[in-house]
Amino acid sequence: MTEESSARTAGTGVSDRARLGLFWCLVAMALAVHNAEELARDLPGWQADRPWLPGAALYGDQGQFAVALAIVTGAALVLAVVAVTTRATWSAPVLVCVSYALLVNAAGHVLLSIVCWSLMPGVLTSVVVLAPVAVFLTRALPPVRWTISAALVTLVAALGLVVGSLAIAALMRAAV
Image (cartoon, rainbow, N blue to C red; front, side):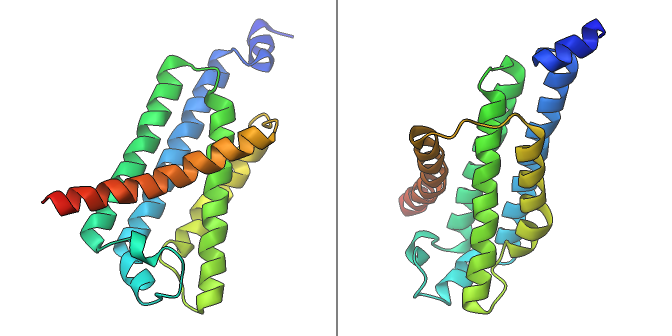
């Protein structure tokens, strides 16, 4: 076994760091494309047409939603940059958790599209981009040991980011 392959299998080689960096870029790009579809296809309008769906009041108008998407996308980019530049030990496990959150998001778009008999904005990139990227990464990276606390932290972080970004966008809109 060469020194390079030994380092790679130990998880400390340059190729592993580069690969992890590419994976973070892939997630950030997938999320940006998905968020762009949600914005371009007017998710707040789609949601407003279905007031019986939970969370309809959260989205606000298109401008407010654009701010929320910018916050979410920016937070994902910052997380990716910090993970890659610091070579953090938490990088791979967090990326797996992010991948599962993206997979749940994609599944939600598909489910709501079926329930509403209407293509929810974001469903196309959910099926074509988010789900394939998330499945690939959960298979390509070392598995996360799922505990109740790990699952709760992932859930709270994902929901907190989404609801928090929508709340910040609403406060910014109210201040203007």
